Length: 231
Figure 1 (tube, rainbow, N blue to C red):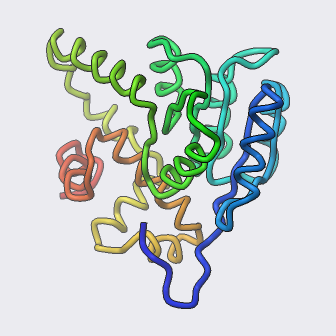
Figure 2: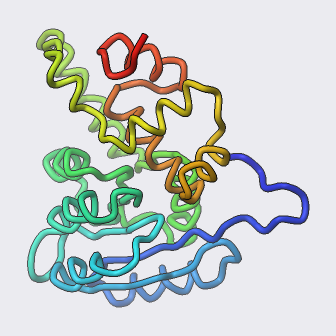
Figure 3: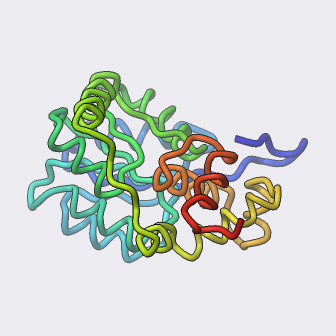
């Protein structure tokens, strides 16, 4: 994350919570309110309230519990990816089984934390995901790695067809990637596209995820190799 210029206040990270456990939600809200760089922009306690929340102004980070009283938080994650495309979604739940983990990641979650994490640590992870990270509880990380090892043992994944590659990135993601290839920083891209730096970093994270890369150089190479960018 690039440091703000001297004398400048770093932009606030706007956060929303979808959580039915009142005690945990209150503790998390208080932890967020006690910081100088995070602002709680909305809370919801059910799936229906979470979907309603998405009709408002987008936030930078959305925390979602999976076990909501009227349905699955997966539905909120999927809707958030569609309606708040610049928002990073982090799961905070009691469900640590592989099925919930994989479904959440496939739905668009950028991080997966178990509720055994303290509110203070979750606050730190909110900052991490806003800066481009993908926080994940250690036990969950082990499950995901085991899953990919199994997939790897089953043989290489099929190559993407040209038409699939062309549709891999959205128009906005392609625009961000094109500016990256020209050497612009996240802050410069934010100014050029009239977006917040957090939004740009969210786009960059999604580009990396879709291209299965971990750096700008790899992203540019892979995008050109797949015909997404002109060589």
